[in-house]
Amino acid sequence: MWSGDSDSLSLSPDLVYPFKKYKNLASPYANHLIACAGEKHCQFGVIPNKPDAIDLAKYLEKQVSLESDAKVRMYWSACVKGCGLHGLGDIGFEGCKAKLEGESVYGVHIFLGGRTTRDANIGKSVLKSVPLQFAKYFVESLMIEYKNLRKKRENFEEFYQRVLSNYSTSAIGFIMMLKTYIRVLNLKLNIGFKENVKTGKNEVFEIFEVGRALYRQIAGYEPYEIYDYFTPVFPKKPVKLKNTDRFEEGFIEMINSMLRSEKRALVFSEFHFEEMVYKVLA
Ligand code: SF4
Image (tube, rainbow, N blue to C red):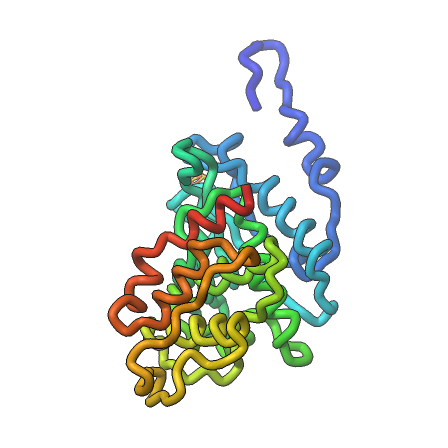
């Protein structure tokens, strides 16, 4: 970097000691990490980026350590231009601004499903404008699923194809948030991705199935007695779940909406579950 002094050329410490700053981190989360320059070194950057990418890899290694035959490619771009190839990552992060309690904060859009193999593919956004400080919890939820469901030597790209690609992007993002909410509040509910899901990426069916599983675990019985292809037949309306001290009122209200034919379609788009989740993470 030119110092402006005609007699001397000085280099920024970041350029002189780049390897000292970013020590080797041997982990399935770090081995394939890509991150662009970020806001400190590029005028277009919206988030710091490199430190965020490294912090997340370290956090995941500590929280959800994977076997050495696992592989997760996390690619980070600090802005929409995409020099960090976020669209091609197994998990892609695109820097953006997010809103938290009315304030503008660092954020990321999270993408899944990018591929660099012969069938190269651009990933799809599953969570938008997530406050950067919370992104690690949602990715942690996803990695718990990868760890629990993965087959021997299955990399994340294969896992995505086998399991996650059977869900809509809305359902994937919703389940990532829901798992985080349940874990942080220690709610003793078991929700996750299934290997042989048959809902055909139909969001209404997906919402219904998640709501049904939550209801069954909380009430101890099925909300409806008879179903026909993810649609309740009898009775017309289930007994509403009652609020208890164990759960937030809004959470119970959301489950009741997930099971009501006329309301369930609105849960992904209009319920704003993310605001409840951000509140418990803050
Ligand atoms: S994606 Fe490219 S343009 Fe955007 S901050 Fe990174 S290096 Fe700069």
